Image (cartoon, rainbow, N blue to C red; front, side, top):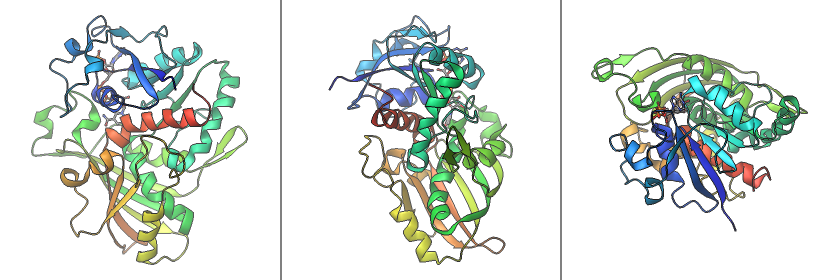
Length: 350
Ligand SMILES: NC(=O)c1ccc[n+]([C@@H]2O[C@H](COP(=O)([O-])OP(=O)(O)OC[C@H]3O[C@@H](n4cnc5c(N)ncnc54)[C@H](OP(=O)(O)O)[C@@H]3O)[C@@H](O)[C@H]2O)c1
């Protein structure tokens, strides 16, 4: 089978370099183009990344000699995975979609647009069909799909089996988010060491709105949003990788602790689809009284799982638990790749 050609926009950033790594031996995709800002364009990838490669494995051979280009829609590829800074993603991604490219984006710019799918394949693979309305509305030959905010993804994966089995009425979440979530170089070290910053711009709004679209129902050309209430508080903590979220839920029906844990374990809607990047266990429940922890558990299933623990009764709502997820892998790079795989399986690529 000929591989599908892929361009990476923002290939030099935290997320972009993880996509480079993830696609090293991908069975369906081949990276043919890398692009970033004007200051990187014209350099070989290995030259531009000399002091910026932030991944513990070595840079893949295939990427070293690729020449970085500007993010203009004249790249030799069928799909672009966008890891662009949101300040430029809006215009650039639209330009690519208009010129016929498929775009799988990590940026916030289009997530809440009515005709743009905000995808977590385990939850709302059917929303991909919004692409048809999008192409009609915007007269685009290409299209855009997006992945959610990195905290949203992991919280939604943990909530979905509860929504399906018991119904959800209220969710309260407090996050402790890793510094890598702010990109590179990100938050100044003087602000982070020995500190917690109780504010991340626009993060609480994303956690309170995106899940309702993701868990909404596709009806014709639009999504009817889910209708539970969410209250979020977001903090930046001195952790490199892995966002930890303390979640309390009010369910619509009574539930036993064992039933909830069993619903986490059984959740695997992609099992039959054979997407190469889908984790074997989307939710991993840990019994240890002090787990999950970012240092120990963020890389479970290659960073593609949402790791849950500490399920117990809540004195105000019904139950509370902790969910941990890798913010760069499942929270961004891995999510964009998984969305691209879904596009292929659904006939939108290749
Ligand atoms: N980090 C995470 O955990 C995470 C999680 C979820 C979503 N996201 C989202 O993913 C995207 C990338 O995040 P990141 O953490 O990888 O950010 P980052 O490390 O700051 O990288 C940003 C990338 O955008 C490129 N860029 C910046 N300005 C540009 C311009 N004017 N024209 C073209 N390219 C430009 C940069 O290229 P140069 O190197 O040439 O400047 C770089 O490749 C963001 O939208 C972010 O919100 C990140």
